[in-house]
Image (cartoon, rainbow, N blue to C red):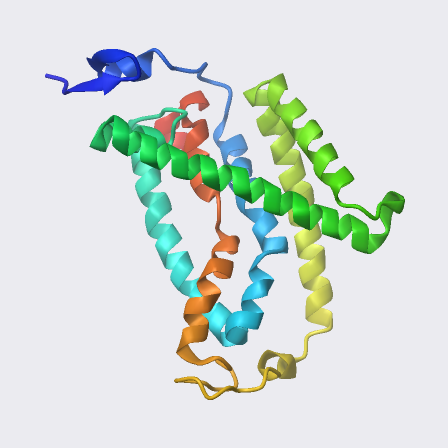
Length: 248
């Protein structure tokens, strides 16, 4: 027998609550979902992580990135299992609601909303910084860039999930090519001496690779997360996948 829970307006089973909020399935293939996952994280591969170099040095950021990769690997495997068993657009909110009830779902949903409100703002700030630094279109105030990004991407999402995923896939492919070109250019100018050019402090465990010691590894965590941040958003599209069990 299904456990009874409090819905937003009265009582009902969990299955009833979710059934009344279903979206149209079949809009997203596994290719588009894969593109969505890449699109979620690739902006953090451009910018955000580099601030960690000033906090932990190259070694500190590298260790933090490896540990963060382990955490995210475990998390995405768990999310893949849950989203294939319970493909709902609520993602983490839905999982928490089913496991812990309405208040657990509310707390998780609020945290997810905060993440996806702050992350796009940070990304728009980075885009504005790029445009300003390159002197494109004579723009000297990033606010114009923020506004254009908001209007364009909200407009794309209003067209529908299928159209939004296709546009996201194209943008992710272009961004991936740009990242590869950047990496190739960086390799051509690589100098190993730059990995240890930060003066070593007197912190515990400090060394040329860990100039700020072990505490530098800890300080690098908020920036190492940019390599993987937001990939947990893929389950949000599980309900609209053609075959959630296989695709997600």
